[in-house]
Figure 1: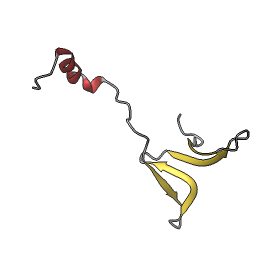
Figure 2 (figure 1 turned 45 degrees about the horizontal axis):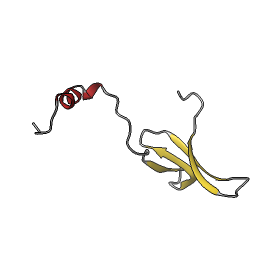
Figure 3 (figure 1 turned 120 degrees about the vertical axis):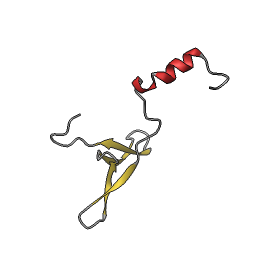
Figure 4 (figure 1 turned 120 degrees about the horizontal axis):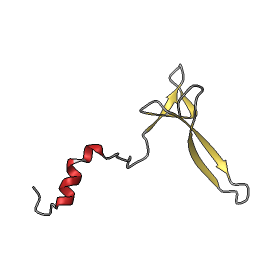
Length: 79
């Protein structure tokens, strides 16, 4: 046991399995490939199979460009 361990820390360690853990980083994305194993522009997939589209948007007032990735919901896919 660590010297600095307190009763509160020990209680948290014992019930750590019940606490929902939030992801600490963005999902790992890989390029989506077509039937010829060529990458499809602007299409990304997570390890769990969720699809994302990458769009390059320009702000109409400032003219600033930004790249955004958004989840693509397919027909029949649960939210």
